[in-house]
Image (cartoon, rainbow, N blue to C red):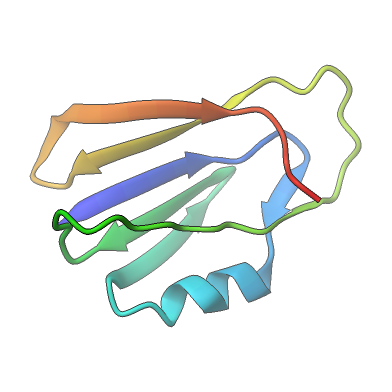
Length: 91
């Protein structure tokens, strides 16, 4: 099992529509939202390219917004993971 761990930007939440679209993908086993982090559990990954889009909604105006992280790791071996970051939301 693979986990995509998305830290949300300060002042943002994931939309319910975004959650519904993710849950309808066959590769997605489960989604959890805890505090400001979204956990997307995937059954497995293969060598096919996958794209995941999270729609975020700003609920609080935050100045000097800092980048948030995205981690991808194996549930059974969390020590080996890939980290990326994002700093803005497209319109």
